[in-house]
Length: 124
Image (tube, rainbow, N blue to C red):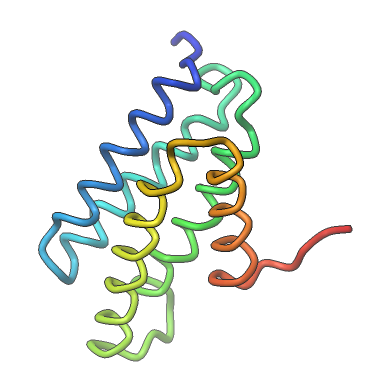
C-alpha cells in the first residue's frame, strides 16, 4: 500500500467525524468510533502511514481508543455509561470538524482531548 497524504488523511478524519455525529445513538455511534480508531491505527503503520503526521494519527488513536473503551471495556456500568460515551464521541467528532481548518487548532484539539478529556498524562 502507498503512503497517504496529510490532506487525504484529514479528509478521511472529517468523513469519519461526520459518520460519528450522524450515527444513531448507542452501538451505531460506537461502530463509527471504531472505524475512526481503525483509520488512525492504520495511519500509524509505516506502510500506510501519513508522512510527518504521527502526532495527528497517534493522538486520534489515543482519543478514539479511550472513547470506544468507555463502551466495550470490562466492568462498564451499562446504559448510562453508554449514553455518556456516545455523547462524548459525538462531542469529540464535532470539535474535530471545527478544528480541521488550521494546524494550530488541530494540535490544540488533540492536546485537550488526549490529556484533559481522556486523561493521558503529559510527558515533559
